[in-house]
Structure formats: structure tokens, C-alpha cells
Length: 91
Image (cartoon, rainbow, N blue to C red; front, side):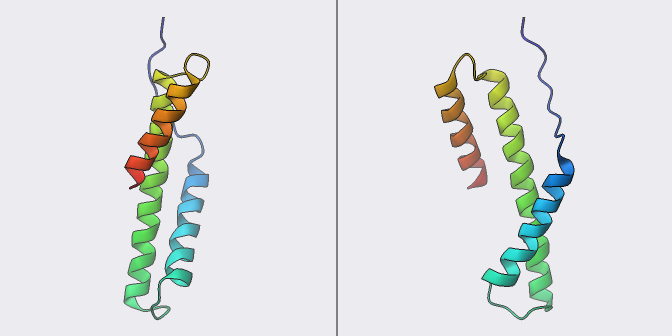
């Protein structure tokens, strides 16, 4: 009998810190704009929120894939669906 699907993101602090780091680093070093300007601060906010949503969505896709296609039963299907799902979601 299959157990009921439950999704719990256990490493929330890692996701928040990773999203904040990514959100600050990318606009600061890779987007040509004046540091501290309104546009720079807005791009930090947008990059942080976007990276957090992608992080959460990827973890959810990983949990769904693991539930429907466990490693032990279908390794190839698990890998294909997980990589494809995360790629499509992130795009």
C-alpha cells in the first residue's frame, strides 16, 4: 500500500539564505547599473523572490517525482521526469 503524499520542505533556512545570496550577487555583479539605486534595489528584490520560488518549486517537483517514481522501482523514469520537470519549471 502506498503511503499518502506529503510535502515538507525541511531545509527552509538553506532556501532563504541561498535565495538571498543569489538575489544580491547576481544584480550586483552581473547587471550593469548604479549600486544603491532604486533600480538596483528592485532588481535585488525580484532576483531574491524569483530564486526562492524556483528553489521551492524544484524541491516540490523532486518530492512529487520521488513519490510517483521511487528510485528503487524506476531509476530512469525518475531521472527523466525530475530533470525535465525542473527544467520546464525553471524556464
